[in-house]
Length: 196
Length: 196
DNA sequence: GGGGTATTTTAGCAATGGCTATAAATCCGG
DNA sequence: CCGGATTTATAGCCATTGCTAAAATACCCC
Image (tube, rainbow over all chains, first blue to last red; front, side, top):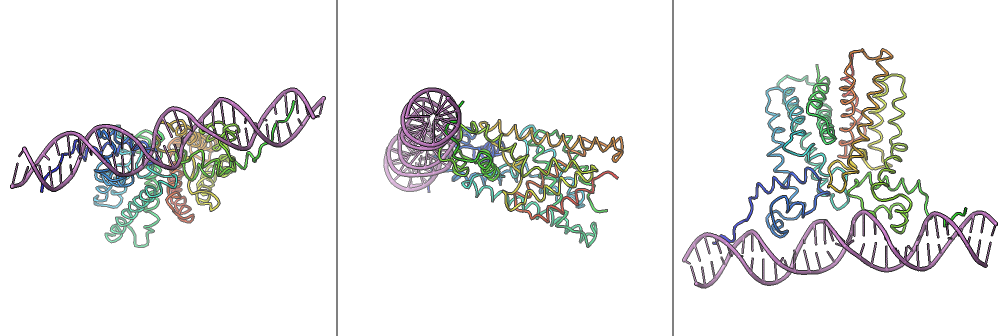
């Protein structure tokens, strides 16, 4: 078994660059040439060889996003209380969506909200990932019922959907230029809906 | 003064069709050929002659949106109380973003959240219109202070931004497939933040 | 029916879209 | 230094993008 000609670029760094572009311009607003340029790849075939087609690259980029800039989401669920978890999630979103080192907003929200039929797969993937986030939050709330932090008759689906809506609204606000402080204020206001 | 050859299509009906397409596919996901097809115009020059270029058409479409499917927004502010106005606004959004006669979501949110540099003007126009909505809500809250519905020290900017965030979150939820009932529930939950 | 006006029609341009066949280059093990 | 493996490089395909010049058509008024 031999080795073959080595990659001329770092795969993970290239994925980070691709993430940046998709994040800023959305799936449909991103051309392959935008990607190769940003990723430091001189030619399209190298990109296709390494990451598959545009859809497949987008999917890999979303994984990278979840493990990188959006890592705080999973970590938020590790908070000792569900209320703390939601606060960590939303304050984390306020920070992440206004991080000067990244595009504004959340790629899961703005990556492909409305698009042509040709981008349907990408849109559906994002929809599924958003639904998965909501489900994860709901699961965290269920643990809170078991721990008697929340009453047994709390409407967890409703709560999870509400806070997910806050999250997504924050992402839109960030994309529109809201400041970090303003977003944190929104979170504080939103927490008024926490069951008492 | 003469008349010239008459239009072969109804301008307002054509705008409604264009709205539908931009709403469903976003600014960047919509091709001129998509528009002419949907608008019942056989050729591009007729469209350019009647509505200007893509950006200008998009702007006209947004006006049409505000006067049509999104008319409920302005009307909501006419409610006798500010709380009633916010409720009318958000419950109206729950209905409008899930209207089976229109695409899901809100064109102001999903029309151009993240896009290529070529769509910058469209994105900025949408951002401005969202900011205008937030400002209008804030103005309505100011009237409520004058009417002593709200305390003089209420943080109106914060409240307006919070409910705007709810509105935008609802739009994302709707685009992702949430049901009308679920969205109304979100509104009820969100109203817990109303000052007491 | 002719003049003036505004529209539609036809045809197409230059640029870009995603993607790929083919060939050259660079590695490893022997 | 050769053979197998893998990646890069060159070049380009075909469809579509937003948009437009030029010509043909249809109306009103006189």
